[in-house]
Image (cartoon, rainbow, N blue to C red; front, top):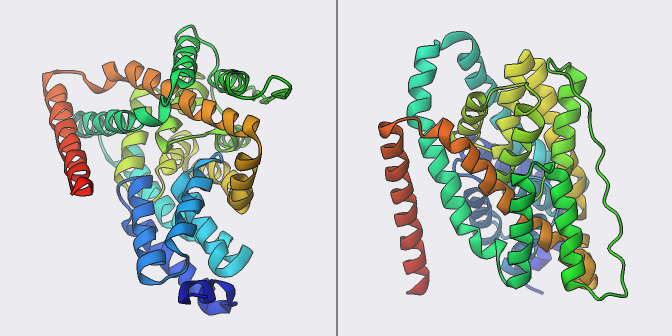
Length: 366
């Protein structure tokens, strides 16, 4: 048995719990760059430096977190915390990673609502939003090979695009294309089953309970990259008249450029709707399901390996989510690229991102 395995098999007690809090609180303060950057930082610490888990175990955990709804890097913090210190580690890892980002986003939201003038906000938006648009487009391009791996994925993506264009609700699109993927891939003797989603009836001026419920619903069903959050926020928040598309873009920008989980976009929107209480409930709603899902990541791997229907459904939902993200990005483009200057910033940011991706590809090839 290797040193890493010995360490995993031994009880770690309070020292292990403290190490979980220390690591993920620190990552919650410095972790800028989105889920991919967060997971890379975790790997350096828990695999290469501290040997909490082996390289193979870490890779399996990343795959498992990608198979369940919710923010992948946050669920990785929870799953790694559970490996290190049991259920207390799961809670400590998630809370430690989320709370610093929550505090930072609340501070930014307070400045946005109470200090900055509309002119300053417009100037900041003119610079920042095109950069965020470039980041999302770059993520879409990087995810293209995940969305379309064979002709059946292509059919699913086209179906999702058509559903979004004609106005089918996003949750229904994902349920239908997931079921269609089962029909395309699984053996005909099996039945795909039913996938129901409860609709939440919301008023234009939401109460605190409605803020919590809508973000709880989003956190329970969102699947795929953190950028898929765009899809659900447009459907459940913008289209219901809670916020404008411009505020959504500002919220996405804050979630992207502050450390910690990208899902703290919900914190910003909650503050915009109802101050600190709204921010706290929106954050609690969107992250609460992840504490449940993270406890089952290891089992999800087994289910996907044993059930072709389950694996096909998840693959269909993954491809469809990326297609829906592309549709929302197209709709928001006219809000982000408002003039020649914004377009120039967008093009420059996209060029930098693509150049970085090319360098990473070249380094991997050498």
